[in-house]
Image (tube, rainbow, N blue to C red):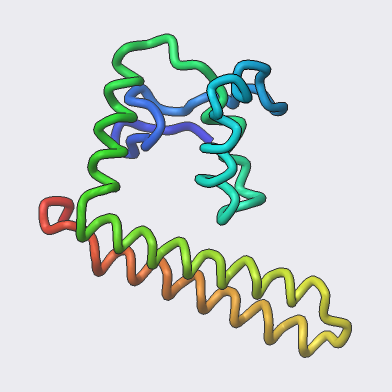
Length: 135
């Protein structure tokens, strides 16, 4: 899927960002980045975020962009809005896991619908909590 200027990336100022290394780079352990990565991404397992953030940034604009995004995401009320959003997404993932594991077709459908409801509620909550300047 192509990104346009109207849809900026949180990861890079110029659009899509390529994935980095799949395995843990050798220097991560020396710098304790493996511990930081585990603390940051463990609650959001299965999202594939590690590979993106393992890719070294070569462009100063990309570094500055990510720093600004991180600062924006740390500031309230946006930080709380995203924490609530991630909780909703976790509920959705759990619902999808239940749907996958269910044996009866009606149970599968119920868990899938509950997961869809959690997804919609998470998106709606994030939309309602967005900063006034983003409206």
